[in-house]
Length: 426
Ligand SMILES: *Cc1c(COP(=O)(O)O)cnc(C)c1O
Image (cartoon, rainbow, N blue to C red; front, top):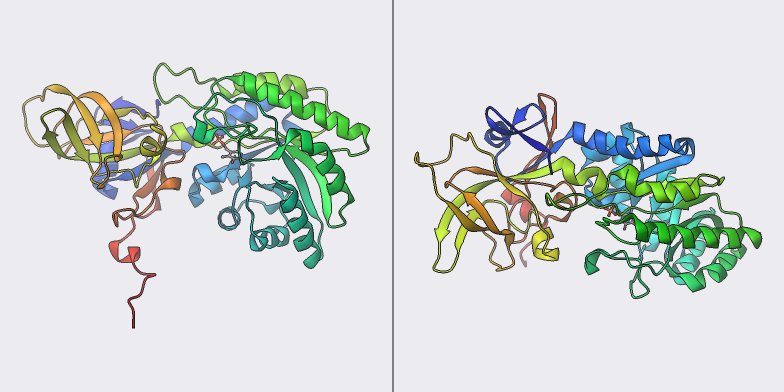
């Protein structure tokens, strides 16, 4: 939440005022802080170091949270591995300089082409989510003359106590292998000629604020690892997934990475397996914001609307999950019209898209002028990654601030690019 600090020229990220970024790159625009990204990664690394587990742990950034090449490259430089869910993400990680042998591949529906690409790249492990996937992977591996390294993603049937759309560890979820079936499936995997059993994986959901469900899942996973070892199937690594939540609202009790990991790390301390974590949101969420400009203020009979130039196609989380993002005035902005101080009102902050679901915030008490800048905070995760061209809107620019430097890491799309792949009938 605290990415932007108030400076003499209004809100700024590191040493750069947001008004300067808006003037240079336009709006809407995603802004990230290199220092904040680095600090979020360091929180995981330091927690592992303090537990004496760093030398056998791998932090695999979950690419789907934000897949910009500059962000992937920054994490690769910091030593991170990557958790991918598609062949597209594999290509991005490799293009960004990530190491193939530090990639784990999750997802319930990997295509044969994706399996082949990942085998040829030499990834660390496939997180297999069903019996059929195991058979298909074995077949594909055989056809390219390799053995596929696998973990089974087990579903521990614990309630992550998060939004139903981002809860993945219940029996009713499409994710993972049912806990009761995992043992037999491991035995089958161990018997397949083109499969090399490497580890176990579990990921119970996202935006988790309570460490207890993840610790409960870890207990179940460890019991299964021991049972497998007793049956002669020794696993090399244990992957406990991602899911740590971030603070979106001032009163939201998001734990620090060290506190969230502590109960899990305590259980892992005396063991010999390597460890993998797959954090996404907690590495990028609070290291990014969406900068937008107020187009018009519209005072309806029942509500006041601030129509801004960002919309649900730029940041889908409010429309998709009814998610709450802090929205702050940038201030000290020369483009705003009017000289008198406006009255604070309760605004609906909405975009120009033709959907009533196109809102970025409900009931925000703000004193606004047309033309002024707003910062939508905590937008680094599942923001740009979910952006679309709905309503034929070009996707926003992305900028990374590093001290006083500003780097354009994705230029704004041009309108002609939106239909460049289309053709009319002959
Ligand atoms: C999305 C996902 C993650 C990352 O989740 P966050 O809540 O962003 O930390 C990790 N592992 C898997 C398998 C995922 O699908």
